[in-house]
Image 1 (cartoon, rainbow, N blue to C red):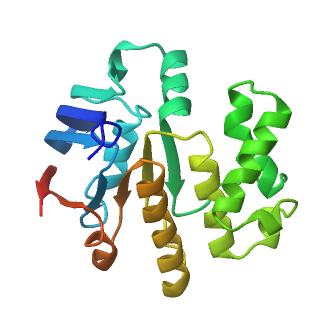
Image 2 (image 1 turned 180 degrees about the vertical axis):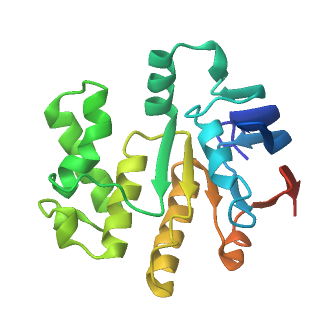
Length: 230
């Protein structure tokens, strides 16, 4: 395995998360430890409401841990400013959700260009890279179409292109095929695995689909607040 594949991208150290609701003190996550390298593809399964999405939010620094450390690309997220955290996310992370979250007023090409525009790259370079990635996900024939003109599977392909256009080290995917029919779901999933291998982009996917989970290199179950290796 090459050095890029072995590069440590994300580390969770003794992560705990509690929510306070009036007099209630609810523990959602307890003493979670995880190391993620560039070559990894990790599935997280568990019952609805067990905290899987919360865990992804913590990994990205979009929510604060109650205790422990989230280390993204060598940076402890709780110790960096909000501006620097945004820059870290833009540089190192990509997000794919069950619902595509494409901006309806913009074309496929414009949606995929946006993460690059945030970096203040030239419009020409943003366009070039976006077209390249849309071509990779077989959506180059839909550049000028808006999300309302696409099928569910096509929207997810554009969402994948948007997540990967910045060449992130890690993709966080929250039920990315949950809103698709079985055939389309398998096509989208196969594409994500291909890009995981080709681009050395680590993948952490929350899913209810056990058959998909078994195709990833590592599987975990979130149960009673703990992350258990399967």
